[in-house]
Picture 1 (cartoon, rainbow, N blue to C red):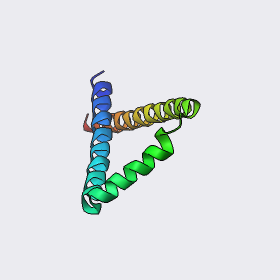
Picture 2: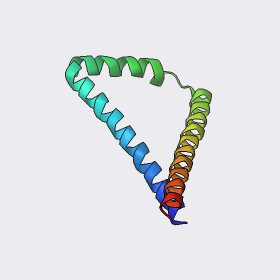
Picture 3: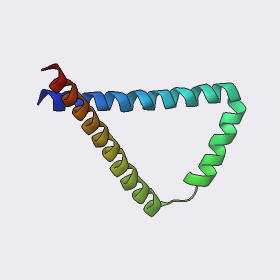
Picture 4: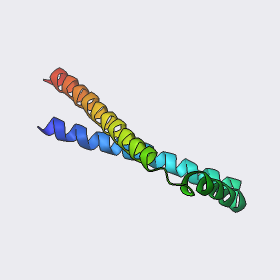
Length: 92
């Protein structure tokens, strides 16, 4: 049971670190581009995605991203658990 919990926590930490790196990269990119470029981009995003409702598309994409995210998390946890089992078997 301990290996299972450790692999779940490790998978969550790895996904969190990857997401943090992506956000940091995005922030640094917009800092480099400047305030005016950021505001122009946000205006275009609003006009493209927020001005007209896309209820079915939003629902479909939310379900799809949730399933993909959960699948990646579970596969990563399984890989870490398998790796921990291999190393535990070698050490005994």
